[in-house]
Amino acid sequence: MGSFEGIRMVYRNLLKAVEKHIGKEEHKVHFTDFIREEFRKNRNLEYPKNSSFIQQRINLAQNYTYLLNSVHHHKDLLFSYNIAVDRSNEMKKVLGKSAASVGLRLPDVYQS
Image (cartoon, rainbow, N blue to C red; front, side, top):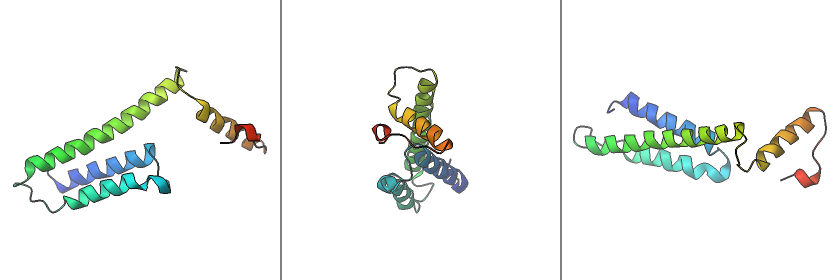
């Protein structure tokens, strides 16, 4: 996976996974900043000379992307099967959306 297009695809997939599963909020930008910095810092490495190092870093990025997607897919499956997972935040969102759809808002007890 030494090609520039392959590396760019890994980079994009990792950023998408982080933004989707961790978030884009202001207090979470350090995740995407770190990823961007790591890819930029290593962009000038010569391929044949550092091929094993580059391949290790690309594998690490791919594995982390896979881990993020898998953990969140697993969590979604647990929610869908009603397995003992704390669903209070999810239920607050559902209740809030239901109330908002008919022009109401939740009582302060349910507000987070």
